Amino acid sequence: MNTVAQAWDGPVGAHWAEHQDRYDAMVSGFNDALFAAAAIGEHDRVLDIGCGSGQTTRLAARLAAHGSVVGVDISRPLIERARASTGHARIVYELGDAQSHPFPPAAYDVAISRGGVMFFEDHAAAFTHIGRALRPGGRLAFICPQPPEPDGEEARTLGLLGSLTGQPEHSQAELRRAMGSLSEPARVHEVLGEAGFGKVTVAPVVGSTVWGRDAADAVDFLVSRAGTGGSVSPRTRAAMEDALRPYETGRGVVMRAGVWVVAAVRP
Ligand SMILES: C[S@@+](CC[C@H](N)C(=O)[O-])C[C@H]1O[C@@H](n2cnc3c(N)ncnc32)[C@H](O)[C@@H]1O
Image 1 (tube, rainbow, N blue to C red):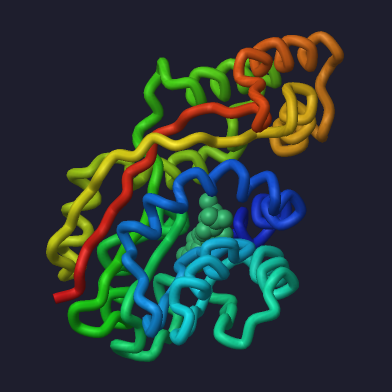
Image 2 (spheres, rainbow, N blue to C red):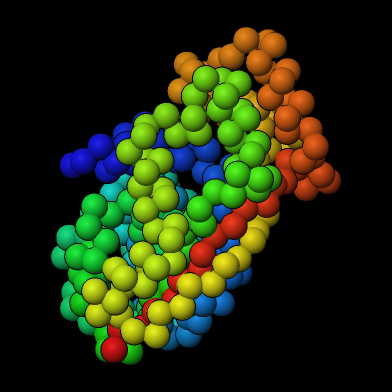
């Protein structure tokens, strides 16, 4: 297992599992765009790649009301959390590396992923493998981050918070690099083309990310994942709260971030 996979199967995955609701609040603003691209039909057999604690898996099962959904993830803590959160006969979670997991051939109508496909070591090989699991005409839909705009709300604020805590948002350089591995649309077209997918579209979507109930609550969360041992000085904490206060709304601390919504078809 490489460093990125170890992080997901270890402390990073454990943090996502422990803070399932917060992470869902951070990324669920992109659900509508993901599911619009996936166009899940009520009889579809769906594969959720890097399903994490399973929010999108469960939403997919609602859309595939007479179908079935398999969520696959490399992270033990997240698969355990997904299983604990789901009591649904049409949903199965499998622990495995989606790059090599023994999916049955041509078994799925659609594969989705909310931010789980950037972490592959070899994207073209991984998408080739996933393509074989789709029936001919089967669809792939995923979201992945756009390159951070230095002046974007989320990038600017997280950069500032990182400089205050002395830690970048992800303390592991490999994880940060992997997060951005599909941030260039040309790269997405290249790897999906190599993997044999057609009708590839890459569309920008800006969504709201919710970081906490208020600035103090968001700081608690950010400090817990900053790798500073869960604490910062009162001065740093106050500066972090000041940086987040402009984003306090009636719905919590809300920032805007951009993702790509990618859709493709297995010929
Ligand atoms: C950013 S999280 C997103 C989780 C989930 N899709 C969500 O939106 O809440 C990325 C997920 O991809 C999983 N992942 C990373 N590499 C993977 C791989 N090679 N095979 C399967 N899952 C993987 C991680 O364990 C993690 O759950």
